[in-house]
Length: 203
Image 1 (cartoon, rainbow, N blue to C red):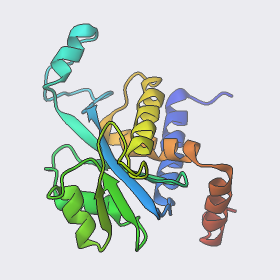
Image 2: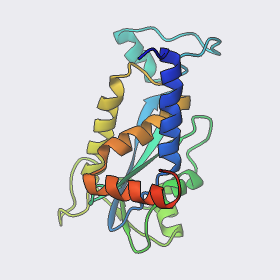
Image 3: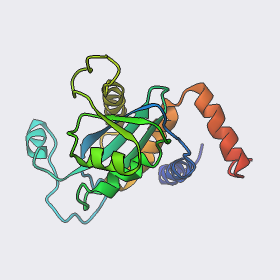
């Protein structure tokens, strides 16, 4: 097309930032909440404040003690998903969980595999939602409360992200928005385009 690759890269992230800022996803009903841990990456940075990581199997062992970032994932049973990046330089605090739960509609039940005194439970109750504990690798006795949907989405995101051979953490929120957009059902895509049009974001 006669366009330089660096220009296309900037265009891509400009489009992804627009998608992320226009995300109006709301969750309702049974909402599963969890997290995915990823290595903190400074890919593309010229001046690192740490030794560069080496490729290969030994890097996997070293990565266990490396600096990591947390991706919060919330999804309901209708297929709606919202994900958010927890900054690597912030502790895992209550307000970070609340940032995801603000997308949950009133009267919803939040399901997570954390104890009843965890930040998940405290943040859920502080916003007026019902909290329900569920086993991490299974379902409750009524087979209704589980986090398998959230875990499946987290695995899909990790597998999808692997094709890029590493993503800088500063761009990770854009890739979260990209994957959410790809994950939308046709009905959700139509609603998203209509809502963006009504707000004057699409011509």
